[in-house]
Image (tube, rainbow, N blue to C red):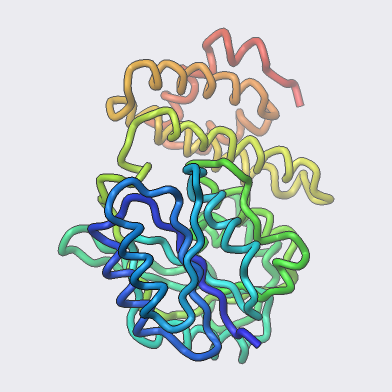
Length: 327
Protein backbone atom coordinates (compact mmCIF):
# COMPACT_ATOMS: atom_id res chain seq x y z
CA UNK A 1 0.00 0.00 0.00
CA UNK A 2 1.14 3.54 -0.75
CA UNK A 3 1.81 5.31 2.54
CA UNK A 4 2.04 8.88 1.20
CA UNK A 5 0.89 10.76 -1.88
CA UNK A 6 2.56 14.13 -2.47
CA UNK A 7 0.73 16.39 -4.94
CA UNK A 8 2.97 18.93 -6.70
CA UNK A 9 1.43 21.33 -9.26
CA UNK A 10 3.79 23.08 -11.69
CA UNK A 11 3.13 26.00 -14.01
CA UNK A 12 5.94 27.87 -15.76
CA UNK A 13 8.48 27.42 -12.96
CA UNK A 14 11.45 26.10 -14.92
CA UNK A 15 13.82 28.27 -12.85
CA UNK A 16 12.66 26.79 -9.53
CA UNK A 17 11.36 23.32 -10.41
CA UNK A 18 14.84 21.71 -10.20
CA UNK A 19 15.03 22.60 -6.48
CA UNK A 20 11.61 21.06 -5.84
CA UNK A 21 12.45 17.94 -7.83
CA UNK A 22 15.83 17.42 -6.16
CA UNK A 23 14.14 17.69 -2.78
CA UNK A 24 11.57 15.07 -3.79
CA UNK A 25 14.38 12.71 -4.76
CA UNK A 26 15.91 13.30 -1.31
CA UNK A 27 12.54 12.36 0.23
CA UNK A 28 11.82 9.26 -1.85
CA UNK A 29 10.78 6.04 -0.18
CA UNK A 30 9.45 2.87 -1.74
CA UNK A 31 5.94 3.49 -0.38
CA UNK A 32 5.79 7.19 -1.32
CA UNK A 33 4.37 8.53 -4.60
CA UNK A 34 4.96 11.99 -6.07
CA UNK A 35 2.17 13.22 -8.36
CA UNK A 36 3.70 15.89 -10.62
CA UNK A 37 0.84 17.88 -12.18
CA UNK A 38 1.86 20.05 -15.12
CA UNK A 39 -0.81 22.73 -15.50
CA UNK A 40 -0.15 23.33 -19.21
CA UNK A 41 3.24 25.01 -18.79
CA UNK A 42 4.52 26.97 -21.79
CA UNK A 43 8.18 27.32 -20.73
CA UNK A 44 10.75 24.58 -20.09
CA UNK A 45 8.96 23.05 -17.09
CA UNK A 46 7.45 20.05 -18.87
CA UNK A 47 10.77 18.53 -20.08
CA UNK A 48 12.08 18.78 -16.51
CA UNK A 49 9.03 16.90 -15.25
CA UNK A 50 9.35 14.21 -17.90
CA UNK A 51 12.93 13.54 -16.84
CA UNK A 52 11.87 13.56 -13.19
CA UNK A 53 9.09 11.03 -13.86
CA UNK A 54 11.70 8.70 -15.32
CA UNK A 55 14.34 9.29 -12.67
CA UNK A 56 12.66 9.86 -9.28
CA UNK A 57 11.29 6.76 -7.54
CA UNK A 58 7.53 6.99 -7.17
CA UNK A 59 7.15 10.01 -9.48
CA UNK A 60 4.12 10.11 -11.80
CA UNK A 61 3.53 12.85 -14.39
CA UNK A 62 -0.02 14.14 -14.88
CA UNK A 63 -0.72 16.77 -17.54
CA UNK A 64 -3.39 19.38 -18.18
CA UNK A 65 -4.09 20.32 -21.78
CA UNK A 66 -5.59 23.62 -20.59
CA UNK A 67 -4.33 25.74 -17.70
CA UNK A 68 -6.79 25.43 -14.82
CA UNK A 69 -4.99 27.10 -11.93
CA UNK A 70 -3.60 25.81 -8.65
CA UNK A 71 -6.88 24.57 -7.16
CA UNK A 72 -7.74 22.52 -10.24
CA UNK A 73 -4.21 21.11 -10.47
CA UNK A 74 -4.31 20.00 -6.85
CA UNK A 75 -7.69 18.35 -7.47
CA UNK A 76 -6.18 16.40 -10.36
CA UNK A 77 -3.57 15.08 -7.96
CA UNK A 78 -6.17 14.27 -5.31
CA UNK A 79 -8.19 12.27 -7.82
CA UNK A 80 -5.11 10.16 -8.61
CA UNK A 81 -3.76 9.82 -5.05
CA UNK A 82 -3.47 6.31 -3.60
CA UNK A 83 -1.75 7.11 -0.31
CA UNK A 84 -2.90 6.63 3.26
CA UNK A 85 -1.67 10.20 3.82
CA UNK A 86 -1.80 13.23 1.51
CA UNK A 87 0.66 16.12 1.30
CA UNK A 88 1.06 19.12 -1.00
CA UNK A 89 4.15 20.89 -2.32
CA UNK A 90 4.24 23.90 -4.65
CA UNK A 91 6.52 23.66 -7.65
CA UNK A 92 8.67 26.63 -6.62
CA UNK A 93 9.29 25.45 -3.02
CA UNK A 94 11.53 22.71 -1.66
CA UNK A 95 12.10 20.37 1.29
CA UNK A 96 14.96 19.21 3.45
CA UNK A 97 15.98 15.54 3.04
CA UNK A 98 13.81 13.20 5.09
CA UNK A 99 11.05 15.77 5.66
CA UNK A 100 8.18 13.48 4.71
CA UNK A 101 9.48 10.47 6.60
CA UNK A 102 9.65 12.53 9.80
CA UNK A 103 6.26 14.11 9.14
CA UNK A 104 4.53 10.78 8.55
CA UNK A 105 6.11 9.30 11.69
CA UNK A 106 4.94 12.21 13.87
CA UNK A 107 1.45 12.18 12.39
CA UNK A 108 1.05 8.45 12.90
CA UNK A 109 2.19 8.81 16.52
CA UNK A 110 -0.43 11.53 17.11
CA UNK A 111 -3.19 9.60 15.35
CA UNK A 112 -5.14 12.73 14.32
CA UNK A 113 -6.95 13.68 11.10
CA UNK A 114 -4.36 16.24 10.06
CA UNK A 115 -1.30 18.09 11.24
CA UNK A 116 -0.03 21.59 10.50
CA UNK A 117 3.69 22.27 10.30
CA UNK A 118 5.92 25.26 10.88
CA UNK A 119 7.95 26.34 7.85
CA UNK A 120 10.82 28.52 6.68
CA UNK A 121 9.93 31.52 4.52
CA UNK A 122 12.57 32.36 1.92
CA UNK A 123 12.76 35.75 0.23
CA UNK A 124 16.00 36.04 -1.70
CA UNK A 125 18.73 35.30 0.81
CA UNK A 126 16.55 36.10 3.83
CA UNK A 127 15.02 33.22 5.78
CA UNK A 128 12.34 33.58 8.45
CA UNK A 129 10.79 30.93 10.66
CA UNK A 130 6.97 30.93 10.55
CA UNK A 131 5.13 29.05 13.29
CA UNK A 132 1.66 27.55 13.24
CA UNK A 133 -0.41 30.01 15.33
CA UNK A 134 -1.75 27.38 17.66
CA UNK A 135 -1.05 26.50 21.31
CA UNK A 136 1.37 23.77 22.33
CA UNK A 137 2.85 21.76 19.47
CA UNK A 138 2.51 17.99 19.46
CA UNK A 139 -0.86 18.01 21.30
CA UNK A 140 -4.02 16.71 19.61
CA UNK A 141 -6.74 19.37 19.58
CA UNK A 142 -10.28 20.04 18.36
CA UNK A 143 -9.99 21.96 15.07
CA UNK A 144 -13.34 23.74 15.62
CA UNK A 145 -12.09 25.14 18.89
CA UNK A 146 -8.96 26.40 17.15
CA UNK A 147 -10.91 28.77 14.86
CA UNK A 148 -11.35 31.28 17.67
CA UNK A 149 -10.82 33.79 19.21
CA UNK A 150 -12.04 36.15 16.53
CA UNK A 151 -9.66 38.95 17.47
CA UNK A 152 -6.47 36.89 17.21
CA UNK A 153 -4.59 35.06 14.45
CA UNK A 154 -5.35 31.34 14.77
CA UNK A 155 -4.56 28.21 12.83
CA UNK A 156 -7.49 28.82 10.46
CA UNK A 157 -5.57 31.90 9.28
CA UNK A 158 -2.48 29.76 8.59
CA UNK A 159 -4.00 28.58 5.35
CA UNK A 160 -1.03 27.07 3.48
CA UNK A 161 -2.19 23.66 2.24
CA UNK A 162 1.42 22.49 1.83
CA UNK A 163 2.18 23.12 5.51
CA UNK A 164 0.80 19.84 6.79
CA UNK A 165 -0.22 16.24 6.31
CA UNK A 166 -3.77 14.88 5.91
CA UNK A 167 -5.16 11.41 6.51
CA UNK A 168 -6.96 9.77 3.63
CA UNK A 169 -10.19 9.57 5.61
CA UNK A 170 -10.51 13.33 5.02
CA UNK A 171 -10.26 12.76 1.27
CA UNK A 172 -12.87 10.01 1.48
CA UNK A 173 -15.19 12.41 3.34
CA UNK A 174 -14.83 15.04 0.58
CA UNK A 175 -12.89 17.50 2.72
CA UNK A 176 -9.63 17.79 0.79
CA UNK A 177 -10.72 18.94 -2.67
CA UNK A 178 -10.42 22.62 -3.53
CA UNK A 179 -13.01 24.86 -5.18
CA UNK A 180 -12.36 24.21 -8.84
CA UNK A 181 -11.12 27.18 -10.84
CA UNK A 182 -10.07 29.43 -7.95
CA UNK A 183 -6.81 31.11 -8.96
CA UNK A 184 -5.96 32.75 -5.63
CA UNK A 185 -6.99 32.25 -1.98
CA UNK A 186 -8.02 28.69 -2.88
CA UNK A 187 -6.77 27.50 0.49
CA UNK A 188 -9.05 29.82 2.51
CA UNK A 189 -12.41 28.02 2.13
CA UNK A 190 -10.41 24.77 2.21
CA UNK A 191 -8.80 25.41 5.62
CA UNK A 192 -12.04 26.75 7.10
CA UNK A 193 -13.88 23.60 6.00
CA UNK A 194 -11.17 21.40 7.53
CA UNK A 195 -11.38 23.22 10.83
CA UNK A 196 -15.18 23.07 10.92
CA UNK A 197 -15.58 19.44 9.87
CA UNK A 198 -12.49 17.41 10.78
CA UNK A 199 -12.38 15.81 14.22
CA UNK A 200 -8.78 16.26 15.34
CA UNK A 201 -5.54 17.99 14.45
CA UNK A 202 -2.18 18.99 15.87
CA UNK A 203 0.68 21.39 15.15
CA UNK A 204 4.20 20.02 14.79
CA UNK A 205 7.49 21.87 14.85
CA UNK A 206 9.27 20.62 11.75
CA UNK A 207 11.30 23.33 9.98
CA UNK A 208 12.13 21.47 6.80
CA UNK A 209 9.68 23.00 4.31
CA UNK A 210 11.07 26.03 2.48
CA UNK A 211 8.46 28.42 1.10
CA UNK A 212 9.79 30.71 -1.62
CA UNK A 213 8.40 34.25 -1.73
CA UNK A 214 8.90 36.99 -4.30
CA UNK A 215 8.59 34.70 -7.34
CA UNK A 216 7.84 36.94 -10.32
CA UNK A 217 5.41 34.46 -11.91
CA UNK A 218 3.42 33.91 -8.71
CA UNK A 219 -0.10 35.31 -8.76
CA UNK A 220 0.64 37.10 -5.49
CA UNK A 221 3.05 39.25 -7.52
CA UNK A 222 0.77 39.84 -10.50
CA UNK A 223 -1.97 42.49 -10.53
CA UNK A 224 -4.36 41.04 -13.07
CA UNK A 225 -7.97 39.98 -12.67
CA UNK A 226 -7.08 36.53 -11.32
CA UNK A 227 -6.13 38.21 -8.03
CA UNK A 228 -9.78 39.04 -7.48
CA UNK A 229 -10.64 35.39 -6.93
CA UNK A 230 -10.04 36.13 -3.23
CA UNK A 231 -13.56 37.63 -3.29
CA UNK A 232 -15.07 34.37 -4.53
CA UNK A 233 -13.03 32.46 -1.97
CA UNK A 234 -14.17 34.55 0.98
CA UNK A 235 -17.76 34.68 -0.22
CA UNK A 236 -17.59 30.89 0.03
CA UNK A 237 -16.11 31.07 3.54
CA UNK A 238 -18.93 33.37 4.65
CA UNK A 239 -21.69 31.27 3.04
CA UNK A 240 -20.45 27.96 4.40
CA UNK A 241 -19.79 29.36 7.86
CA UNK A 242 -23.27 30.91 7.92
CA UNK A 243 -24.67 27.42 7.33
CA UNK A 244 -22.71 25.92 10.23
CA UNK A 245 -24.56 24.80 13.36
CA UNK A 246 -22.54 27.36 15.33
CA UNK A 247 -22.69 30.16 12.79
CA UNK A 248 -23.21 32.83 15.42
CA UNK A 249 -19.94 31.77 17.06
CA UNK A 250 -17.75 31.59 13.95
CA UNK A 251 -19.17 34.28 11.65
CA UNK A 252 -17.56 37.22 13.50
CA UNK A 253 -14.14 35.69 12.83
CA UNK A 254 -14.95 35.08 9.16
CA UNK A 255 -16.23 38.64 8.67
CA UNK A 256 -13.18 40.15 10.40
CA UNK A 257 -10.85 38.15 8.19
CA UNK A 258 -12.70 39.12 5.01
CA UNK A 259 -12.53 42.80 5.95
CA UNK A 260 -8.81 42.54 6.71
CA UNK A 261 -8.12 41.00 3.29
CA UNK A 262 -10.21 43.63 1.49
CA UNK A 263 -8.32 46.36 3.39
CA UNK A 264 -5.01 44.77 2.42
CA UNK A 265 -5.87 44.84 -1.27
CA UNK A 266 -7.22 48.38 -1.09
CA UNK A 267 -3.89 49.44 0.36
CA UNK A 268 -2.10 47.78 -2.55
CA UNK A 269 -4.15 49.20 -5.42
CA UNK A 270 -1.10 50.49 -7.28
CA UNK A 271 -0.04 46.97 -8.20
CA UNK A 272 -3.29 46.34 -10.10
CA UNK A 273 -4.03 47.24 -13.69
CA UNK A 274 -6.42 50.27 -13.67
CA UNK A 275 -9.41 48.28 -14.90
CA UNK A 276 -8.76 45.58 -12.30
CA UNK A 277 -8.46 48.19 -9.53
CA UNK A 278 -11.87 49.55 -10.51
CA UNK A 279 -13.34 46.07 -10.55
CA UNK A 280 -11.80 45.34 -7.15
CA UNK A 281 -13.49 48.38 -5.65
CA UNK A 282 -16.86 47.61 -7.26
CA UNK A 283 -16.87 43.93 -6.31
CA UNK A 284 -15.39 44.65 -2.89
CA UNK A 285 -18.15 47.16 -2.18
CA UNK A 286 -20.79 44.65 -3.26
CA UNK A 287 -19.21 42.03 -0.97
CA UNK A 288 -19.39 44.42 1.98
CA UNK A 289 -23.03 45.00 1.24
CA UNK A 290 -23.74 41.26 1.41
CA UNK A 291 -22.12 40.82 4.83
CA UNK A 292 -24.20 40.88 8.02
CA UNK A 293 -24.04 44.60 8.76
CA UNK A 294 -23.92 44.29 12.54
CA UNK A 295 -20.90 41.99 12.30
CA UNK A 296 -19.34 44.32 9.75
CA UNK A 297 -19.75 47.24 12.18
CA UNK A 298 -18.04 45.20 14.91
CA UNK A 299 -15.22 44.17 12.59
CA UNK A 300 -14.51 47.76 11.53
CA UNK A 301 -14.62 49.01 15.11
CA UNK A 302 -11.94 46.45 15.99
CA UNK A 303 -9.64 47.41 13.08
CA UNK A 304 -6.81 49.90 13.19
CA UNK A 305 -7.72 53.35 11.88
CA UNK A 306 -5.89 53.09 8.55
CA UNK A 307 -7.48 49.85 7.43
CA UNK A 308 -10.90 50.68 8.84
CA UNK A 309 -10.91 53.99 6.96
CA UNK A 310 -10.22 52.23 3.66
CA UNK A 311 -13.06 49.77 4.17
CA UNK A 312 -15.52 52.37 5.49
CA UNK A 313 -14.88 54.55 2.46
CA UNK A 314 -15.63 51.61 0.20
CA UNK A 315 -18.68 50.71 2.25
CA UNK A 316 -20.23 54.11 1.53
CA UNK A 317 -20.19 53.48 -2.22
CA UNK A 318 -23.50 52.78 -4.01
CA UNK A 319 -22.66 49.12 -4.66
CA UNK A 320 -22.25 48.44 -0.95
CA UNK A 321 -25.34 50.41 0.07
CA UNK A 322 -27.55 48.69 -2.50
CA UNK A 323 -26.81 45.20 -1.23
CA UNK A 324 -26.58 45.91 2.49
CA UNK A 325 -28.16 43.34 4.80
CA UNK A 326 -29.55 44.25 8.19
CA UNK A 327 -28.59 40.89 9.70
